[in-house]
Image (cartoon, rainbow, N blue to C red):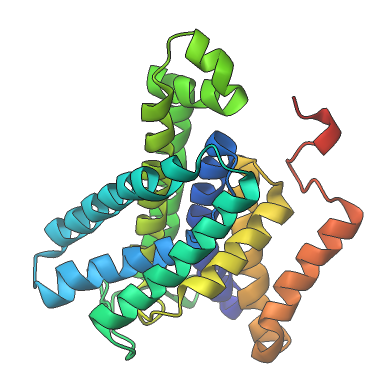
Length: 291
């Protein structure tokens, strides 16, 4: 029982990272209509922003984390200005291909800057553990679960209790109507990319101590975040959270009780099962119901 409890906490922790990445994915998709295939590289950039600030610059960790998140916010604005906005009037497939191209550029930029060797990003609470019910739990895993819950709560307040968030939801519903209402649509669209980048940055900083920082780490994260959005419901923020945790738990428990060789097969097998049985996911709406 203690082993199961320990594995469940680890599953919630890695699932929280997938949930944050999936939420960034969903916010961008809902607001701009773009499926961001660079979402995994956003997480990789977040991890390496932490490496640059904490490992290379030797900044104290609160300042290093703040600098890394500021860098991710600036990256979100740059992505909006240099990639999304020039391609905004183009067909959706053109924008999607643009995100794929930028994803490759980001990966190669990280390779040139940091090299191909994995880098260890230490947690500010490195090595700390607590014993709960006979299980030895990493404090970083508990912090990841807590930070994920805190960020989900903050995001809910932002989207539902502030005029800024209500404006973003209005743009997500109908851009033309939002313009007629006098909303600053470009500013809100830019902020959706900033929010997506910040969530990915937070995911990267939390993931760094669990995985090694590696230029190829973005691809598996993107695939798991995509699976989370499919299971939770494409375009649903609660679905992204639940789907991410579901994928994290299935990955950790599957690797422990079945085989680590099949952990990805289990996650994607569940995703394919949802596509056959409930393609709208747990919280998504049917395509014909939208609009």
